[in-house]
Length: 182
Image (cartoon, rainbow, N blue to C red; front, side, top):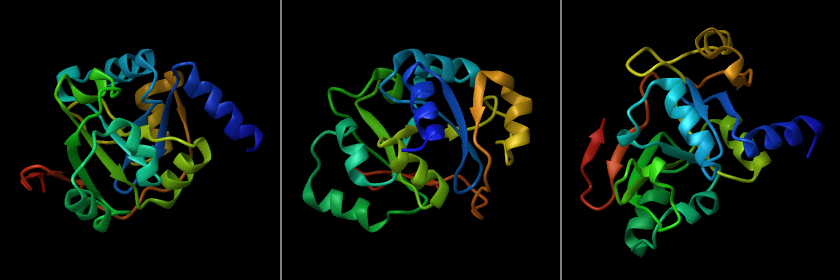
């Protein structure tokens, strides 16, 4: 791991927030294992904590600690849609922080198709919280400069290009198959 990656890992381990390019916009993220970071992220966005947060990862193994055991058919369905812009709402493991779930028994997870976001998760060796980089109810940031203007020095902004997708990821409830967000 290079010096930048080591510094970024230390930043996240101490509750730091990051903004990074994803498929459709800049994402605002943190280490999902850090309750202080989750609270800081929710406050920075002005987001209702009851909405919960989603996790993005480079592969299924990074998401596994946050997800309860799944039926084989359900897991296969998820994996067929990944990597890609499909987020699945699945049963949360007992270890999954309530700030991620919004106090529900489910958590939203995605294996990203964005090469930069996937590389970031691989380099850090973990899933990241991924919510749009914006104040709640506002348009998501499309550039690093917008992220810096919105969040200032409270967030470490990683330069890069967002993907070509125009909409947020599709959100599907694994238990019911219902599309929650087209």
